[in-house]
Length: 193
Image 1 (cartoon, helix red, strand yellow):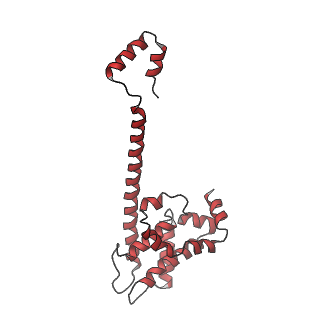
Image 2: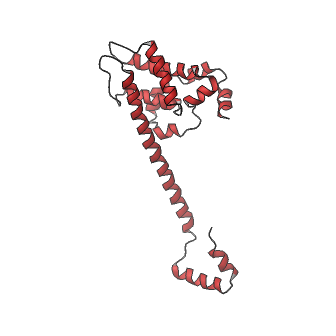
Image 3: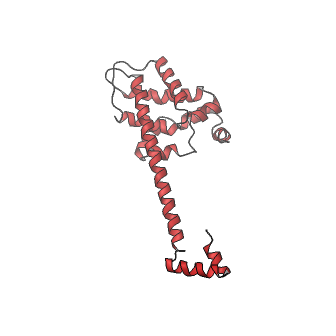
C-alpha cells in the first residue's frame, strides 16, 4: 500500500530525488523539526520503502547526494572518495532502512551545525557513522518522550470525561443499596463504561 502511494506520487524516482533535495536540510532546521515529529510521520518514505519500491540504487544515489553535501560543506584537505561515499551510503541503507529521508536530512543538517563534532583534516566515514549512532539514540529518546506525552494527554482526557460521571462514596453506597434491592436504573448505573 505504501509502495503504491509512493509510486503514484513519484512514478519516476528522479522526481523523488529532485523533491527531496539537500535544500530540505536547512528547511528542517528552520522549522524546528523534532526527531519524533519526523520519525512518526508515516507520509515520509523510509530508506527501506525506497529500496523496496525502486530498488537499492535509488536510496543509495539519494544518500550519496545528501552525504556528499558534507564533502562540499567541510574545509578539510581530504574528502570522502567516491568509493567511500558509495560504501557509506550502502551501509546507511542496510543499517538504517527504517529511518525516513527527512530524518537523514535532519541528521546531516545537525552534523553541519556542529552537533556531532567536527572533522580534523579529513572527512572520516567512521565519524559519520558514530554520529549517526548518536542521532539514533536522540531519536529514540524523543520518540519515547512524545509517546509518553501523548499517553499523558489521553489519560487526562479520559479522566476529564469520566469526571462528569463522578459520585461521592456516600452516593455510591446509596446507589449500591438500591441496586441490591432490585432497582434496575441503579444496577445500570453501576455497570462499567
